[in-house]
Image 1 (cartoon, rainbow, N blue to C red):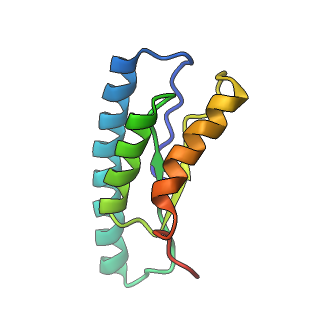
Image 2 (cartoon, helix red, strand yellow):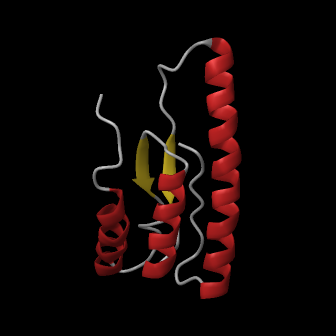
Length: 108
């Protein structure tokens, strides 16, 4: 897993957007490092997962998922949930992210 930052709930939109952007930058650096290291060592047997962020904002979740898909992780997770938001919102945000992620993860 790259990084899962669980910010407070409810989180202000601007903070959620800023943290999602920072998470993507960290994820991109981590993905590049992971791939370079794996190729240098000749060991591609481990997988690295990207984690969708965006707090309780559906558009931020979708944007996060799209950006992570561009980085071509072999698997994805939905992060930053179950930290105090209502269960219905947890389910809604999970649906938003997984709708875009379906079919992108690699089969073993």
